[in-house]
Image (cartoon, rainbow, N blue to C red; front, side, top):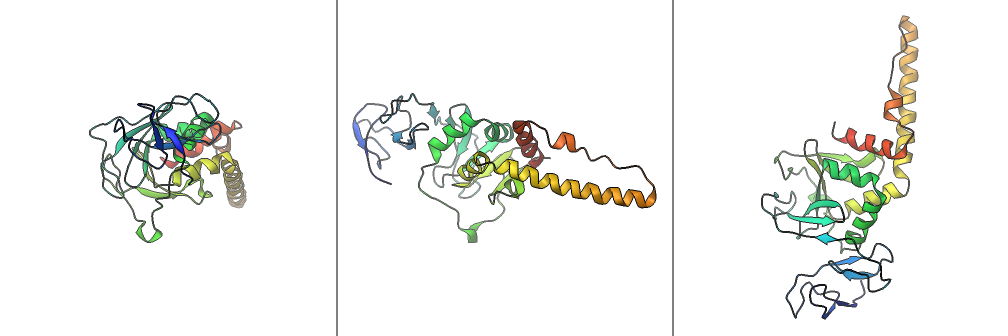
Length: 239
């Protein structure tokens, strides 16, 4: 990443973009990308210095009882990007989202853009494949299930059915890219074909024994509205 001269959002003094603290006022600094032009800026800056776009608020208030990172056991901190609240690990860049937050993020394009602008340009802290294992939920300490998101994304996420989802660094941007590229619709169509084939086999079995045709409930699973379909996919992760 190229180093740029940016302004501290607290005191306005010029600071190199690779610095994590202002040398004048000692404020903690973190870079993000402008959701409009992808120009580099510090979190807390009111307007993008490249295109002038007004920024969404991103706050990282301190808090107690937020749990520990499932990977490195560091204490989690609150992170709010626009209207989306996460808990983040400052050591490994992992993120925790509760069930409602994850469902909304999968549907709301504006929230996706804001999140991508904030975390999409971070340096990589990808977890090594050899270190991947079942990890505990930050809320209940129970080991979480591992699941390939939408069965087709290739992104394996850690899910606590009661409390939420853990994303290792780079996993959430990959899921957002998958959704925005139409991956959910492709996954939806693939599953629809699979269920139709299963329905056909069941129908054939029923005919052999003279029973009534089974009801599969396809209409409730595959709603015509794309957002409703995505919500249905996400909710079924926690069933």
